Image 1 (cartoon, rainbow, N blue to C red):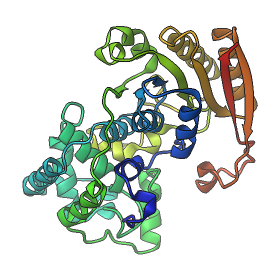
Image 2: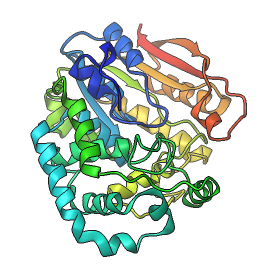
Image 3: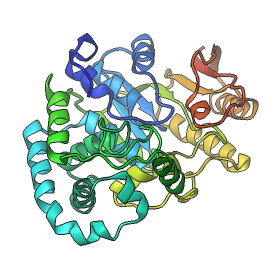
Image 4: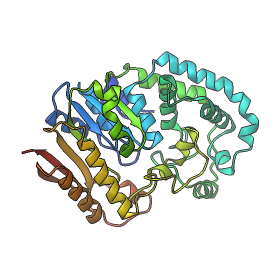
Length: 370
């Protein structure tokens, strides 16, 4: 559990870390860009919002953020940060889930070997009860509870609900089983109520962040962007002055596959699937990737103010970089372009997962009014 220190001395800082997610914006970075290119009361758009860092930064800095995220895990994190339920409601929900867990003994026993080696019996029953009963799409109490559970669903042994695992990425079931058996690792005996209660109290110790009129939508940005002008969230905006985003990189990672276990907790099948539908894969098809990037920027352009700044972080590798650069040039021909190279200073997460090919880093593309 994170220690209480100056790093977490405000509600905004304490909630910013919800939750572990691959390739997320650093909060300091999104804060600095938003401060530089917007004023209080302006609006910020992120059509590939991930765990909602840019939208959350905007809200905490007195702006109005609007985000779109395709992956339910990222959306739940963003929703909980922007609109967390009161602490007492979340604790009441936790108590109810623990009470309901006793009804899932038989279902717990029928789960696959992975779940038996990953979680203790008490934790399994509790998680199945949570999966069955949390209405995370519509209830503030439930999306907050779900987000906090997702953080600790897997990670370091004794610091999470699972046997030893990485926190940012769910490993393939058979790989994990073999790894645990080779090391003779059993799931930790954890009281899920006590474990989660202490972490909920830590998260709320400085209160809740305020993010009035900021919102994150669940779904494909190509479908949602055209509907935004008619939404209540858009009508509350004073004008979108900044597009701040980082689209997925071609062929790098599959966000849905990497989060398969957290998706299971949200009601999806207990399978590590490589393709869950359009734009829910590794973006290896270059033609589909090109269409996604071009269409996303075009549809975003229709709701931006004419003098809006467009700030895009992308991969420096040739195809992703050129695809993004050309799409921006086509959609925003009357804006001036600046490039800032961002070489990696640390090992990337793909390196940690076995991909040791050299990485050229990232590059920021900034388009400003002429």
